[in-house]
Image (cartoon, rainbow, N blue to C red; front, side):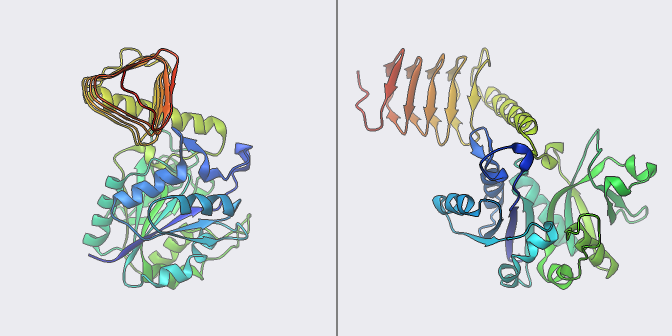
Length: 345
């Protein structure tokens, strides 16, 4: 197995968010988009991660320091495109020569570990210099299209919307902006990328064009879910990401035997664990590293953050953070439970 690492691009300001925080720190179900991406990489057994920071770098770096594990960071002082951002990680990449690097966007939270791992398996088995993670969309407008060779099926080019003719625009397979690169191949072209374009920026897909031009193997792995390509540039798109994530999590828990008779106001974070035979009533919000054992009734209007709840416990209109609540307890309504507070009735 080749040694692997990841570079996550997280320098963007996100002006259209009209927010006082870095774009990648915008939350989806209370969890920063950047953390969704980091978790996907670490769950795919990629432990060495370099985050390229830029706008409000101090906030991003402080957040990285608060997480379990060691994350490197490099600073992109001028935002000159994705290719330029990867150049900032040059010294990090050189430690992994002979291996593979996964390039991810810090504002695309729905990339997942299974997609990352499956794409890398294809990358290794085919001996690719680059493997693009792609997805098929019913409406691909605005995305770079994956153009494949008609005979081999290998990736031939990535053509952006503005450069696409009618035939290319009809292609539904699009570039997600996530890539597996052979580190040596990437470094061999990284400084040959040109900024001769309207924006004067260095774009990472141009590295793929250069690698193809050198006769190296390049292919694309089609992700199972079209959501893989989704990101957020404004609060409306952020709301759409929250809606998609919320509905997916609710469906997952209902399929696992959690009773949610009415989902109005129910929000469950991505790191929450619920056992079956639990009932979630309207207005209940479960956040952070919350775990709920079997047989509980939560709600209506209960808020739990980083809590552990034992079996067969009822929490009616209760709020608590960082608490451990035992089995067979009944609390509420209108009760606030503090950490380390005695909860036995």
